Length: 609
Image (cartoon, rainbow, N blue to C red; front, side, top):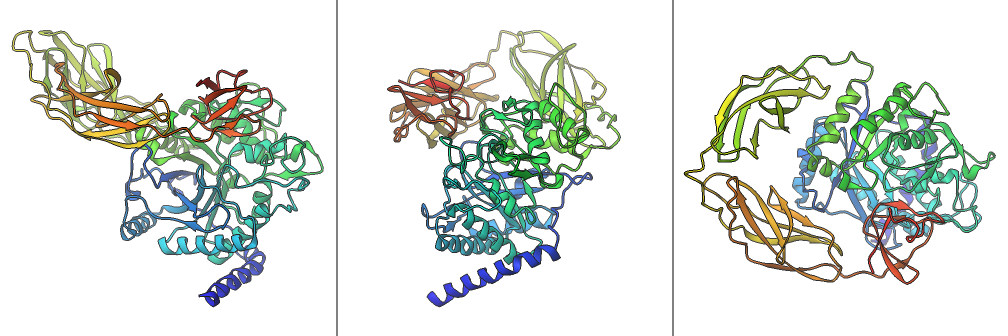
């Protein structure tokens, strides 16, 4: 066993020596994009279930070009060994899905780290363990590449390690050597990417952990790694979320969640910047095709969610050179047309949010530089009523077609918009009994084109007599599917009804906690280490409510050791800290700065006790 391990290590070292020669002979392989423009969308796939829903790999939206399986994680704090077990899969089925995606032109990459996966390669032995274990995982499952998503305290700089071009801190030096060895082992077609937070990259313009007194030693800690492997790095996808305000090249703070933030953060990577504002220590720009913009797919996915319109406003400037506001690009005032694309956390949250991210941004990227789409979808046909009560009418119709893709339908009650849906059915509620209504439907596409109006359908709601009084069956199998210190996730078996089950009310004791239409829910705002008793009631379109389900008692996770508040720390939503003898909870993800003590910034913190 020992001799085999030595052979593996020797092989890794040999590949390391040959690496410099190989990257000069073989250019970095480009990842095939589905868009005619060559721009990609990268999405992280959850190897766990956090309430956003589990998706099989083969069922990920076709709008994604690259799927990052997240995450492979360390088996120990500092031994360097990485482990990976597919969630809710057999190995055979997982491998089959990876093969399926690769067969239809997608890239499937293993991502290492994440918020809970701290990786510290403090020794050369840890480095070799990392190389060997990661290589084994990639070969076992057939991954196309490796994404480095080190967060938390994985990377830091020792005091005095001030030159990012010649780092001396072991966790930095060993990671660089490990990545070069893995890239060299698999060859030029192997995809290498990184997904650091702004704290580890752009913050390096204002503070660099190895050279500033009193600042967080992790500030800018990714810069030496990016620089060392830049010739073999396919792309860098900085997480433009869960970030505090960051100083841009205009020496102004920029705050996440708006177009200005994304323009300023991208400009720093595409222009380059003096590290810690030292003109003699300049971090050079990456190529345009090495830069991907990282975004949350949904408000619950991370702090700093940015609306589609704000994202595309930023892209209009960065890619097309269409300015807005006061910020101006420094490296290329006319824009960066070869920007690689977008990344999102995550494909699961994208599906949870009805594919808003992938549908909207895929259409935008595909149409860069093309003639605007002005063709409206065909008129919806076959509009019929599939059911009615005293206060609602259920409708269905035949799907429309479009030269690109139909994205949804608007249902009108007379001349008033009643609701918008993505499918070919809808229920219009809030009507008056015994009243006649006229409904029509219009189809719309991603470019905003709207079809002509369908033929009108006249429907009369049920009169007061003959009221439906039959309640749905009782929800069964109420169970907890997950919990944190402040939330509990629940699921149950669907009820049935003589008409239609319209939704469910979830009770926390005798209090209504929330109402949902599906058979799962997450109750937030709870207290750590506290027992709660939940029940669920089903309701139908006529307003009948079932008997409560059997009660389920669940205790939230106990509060872990709470650390004192400190500056230059990346805090996530629901993190707890102490300050001046009181406990505070993060309500908006950010990286703390001096003056941002919890008592001073109530927008970022809420008092717990």
